[in-house]
Amino acid sequence: MATKLHIPHAPFRPGDKPDFSNIKLPKAGELRRPPTRIHANETRDLSFSMIRVLDGDHRAVGEWDPHLDAETLRQGLRHMLLNRVFDDRMYKMQRQGKISFYMRATGEEAVAVAQCMALRPGDMLFPSYRQQGLLIVRGIRLVDMMCQCLSNSRDNLQGRQLPVLYSFKDVNFFTLSGNLGTQFPQAVGWAMAAEYKGTSDVAVSWIGEGSSAEADFHYGLTFASVYRAPVVLNVVNNQWAISTYQNVAGGDQNPFAARAIGYGIPGLRVDGNDFLAVFAATSWAAERARQGAGPTLIELYTYRAAPHSTSDDPGRYRPLDEWQYWPLGDPIDRLKKHMIARGEWSEEQHAELEKELTDHVLASWKEAESYGTLNEGPWPPVSAMFEDVYKDVPPHLIKQKRELLE
Image 1 (cartoon, rainbow, N blue to C red):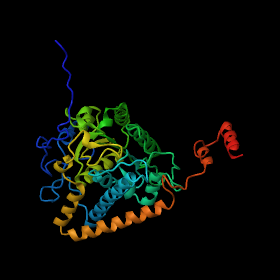
Image 2: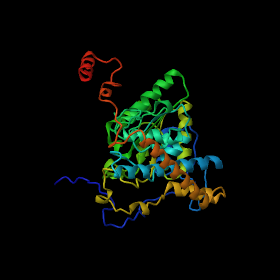
Image 3: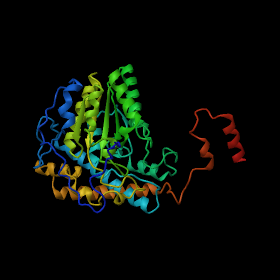
Image 4: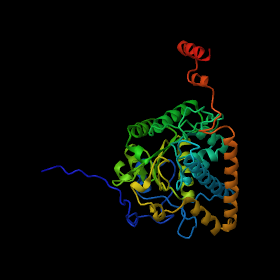
């Protein structure tokens, strides 16, 4: 008898009408919030169900409600909206040939923003390429982020990285790697070193669900578990790894969060479009790490609304309007409605904020352009190719540089 292999398929293809009724969402607030020192085996409900705080009436309910004050909520909304306005501007600039490449975080803003707001400044961030919200929360100027994408004279990486592969050591933001998966073992190693030094800092890392099929995912979880490293490992399940649906990485078998239990690590599956749930789960995991109880794996269940990158055409592999049917909605809209329901925000205030942030992004772009663009320069001198590569420049490069400048 011939072997029958299971070939995973996406639920909808171009031309289909999306129907997500098969996704069973638990009621907001129904899951317990256990003590942080809980054993991994006792987190089955937290990894197979989903932590949700905001209900259908935009109220915060249940034990996972972080009880954030109005100012913190306004700050979170501002950061997420700025992330989206910034992304939209940079996408347009790529289409105009001003930059070579860009990746938007549309629909995933709550992941980076809420998580970073739940952390401490000393915590080390090991991001993948859709967490620009981390930099916004930690106060990096948009101009500096734009200049990295422009590879201009003010680029802090001097054109040596692909656009959006940021690096900002001053705010504990580790250099992005385009080869995803590397972030997990790097974060675990940093966390182990922090423990040796006796600090209370934790490492936090992000990969997409597709990268969970990489060996680095398993290396990271093994070391984190064995050494009880103070680390929070995040799998951002945005449903799509470029054009490959999450089922190809095993998403149709069990939740990605459930993989943690086999390693002796608690797994939390979180509504990634619920700002309050993301904040609460991250706070819980960070507190656990600081107490010496070890790592946590968080699956952030969300949706990549934008193309994978400016090199991608999602209309070739999914319905273009699929995002509109996503049952967990828009993270910005959900937080806005929650604040309105609390009487601490309004549509008028939201429109004013959006205009303010749009003006800020436009002004930042104008300044960034003054330092050079991809096509118009000014460009670094040719001799710069020999700089910032080696700490001690080897003799053959010294010779080559001298010959170039003669």
